[in-house]
Length: 393
Image (cartoon, rainbow, N blue to C red; front, side, top):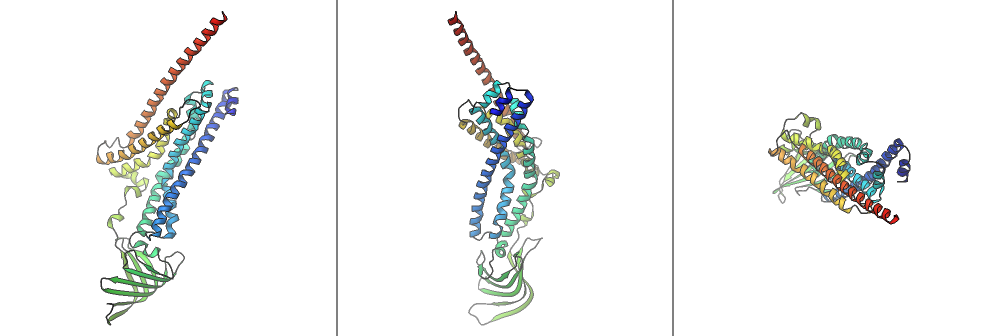
């Protein structure tokens, strides 16, 4: 604030430079702090969730951190948009509370100039958000889907095996024993498998083994090499012993529907070329975060205004309501677009236009309120000056 007041007493160009740097530094510092806090909260929430699944044997422990990183990457674009909005709100609100904004307005700096001061950050934030939601988010979705598919049903039987101990499958039909595992866990040495089906008991012993997934059917197999299979019924003396060079045990059946990539898993380029309504709705959803940066920047101008020396509690509540209204309408617009409630040409764009219209309405109300307040101030000053002149006479 002292730097701004000092610049106000000099020429205009230094004032503009100081004001821009001041707003940008305050907003970026607040934004980075909020982003760090939200990332830590999201990381802790997902880490606990994946840790519980790992303890239950649903996923392998060695992929938890990888899946956690993909979750953070998937949410980063929207978090950038959210933290930018609340950083602008908190910065401008503090300036109103500390009377800095009053001093700037009294010095001839209008709200448009204030907006232009932090508008320099809009384009970089939009580009970062667009890169994360258009490129990184679908890639993270695809990678997560692959990991979850590998860990589902029989897909995690091999990845969760520990060397040198007996491991039971999630369905209890198989017992695995592996003496050694390669560093990448792709190759097993000295494998023992006990497979029970109703009253039949099969025991397989092999020198090597690895996991294989059929690309056409999606079935997952445990492929064993150079071993023996023992078949028979417990309690009966008859057993069949057979030797094999390669033997496959099916761990899980593939789901044909899982081979069809949904809109969330497709790249942005594929969605752009598609004529399917669901793909177009997903493409417009990915554009939500970068476009919301501009909408929130405009919306923060009227929402951040607060009387001097008063808290920002009420304004932050309004900001939260505006944020949740925006997000819920965006989610609702997708269903309406796919179901044909809204025309295809309108798509989901009406939500952004509606929020910009709300921002314009709030600015109009704000300007009327400010004009009325200035009139009252002029009348009060007029009465005081008239009273002083009367006493001097």
